Image (tube, rainbow, N blue to C red; front, top):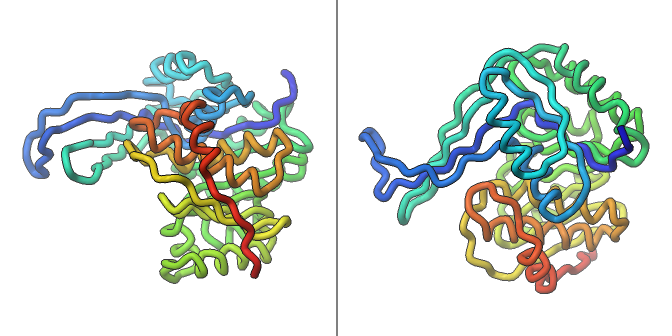
Length: 314
């Protein structure tokens, strides 16, 4: 197998099912129309955004054997290059209910259980493609049955092989992240508030928080700020990226797309300022598509030209 610069890990995948209900009423029977059904999980979402924009990558996915075939068909349809590990049980399902004039409602089902042997199989499956300079994403919740001790040991071995580790998962505590010292993390305002145990509401607080994590050994701290854009604290400085106003159709998966953008710019050797710009362009363009559909290249190009990036002098 050839070397691969970007490898996405999806150990806890899901079918993302989107449906529309004209007037959703809780505690009542609701007639729904399914509008989209896709193979999902944060790693798959990152891979799909990269594929659409012609950035080569490999997705490793763990499939529950009971409904694996439909997942494979979806990956093939999206032209995602992947390798798989099959386990007993079912791939979980996430249902998002869209309705007129109200926020989305999400229902998530539990999926398969696993154990530490899954990490061993994962390491073996990607051993030939992971090496110095690779980017490996570990995103989404850790599957049931895996201890954080085993997960951290697995991630350290990836780092020892020379991989740049990207973590975007609520399964990790702040202490875990400081211990692992990933190459990139991408919390949003809610997540950074949870990490630090305080309500981060202002841009200045977000910058201070990101700097604190950077000083503790995390190379790149990118905090997404919703429609206000994002900030990045890294070795080249502190940067703020502000996107243009767009009509947001769905924000689901926008964070995954922003990671895809950061990685796409990284493999092309762009400056960290431009990596942030590209990340925000991917994330903003993702909001212009329905469900978890990836950002379109034309939308990314249009948004990219309008993003304002400035260095913040602290």
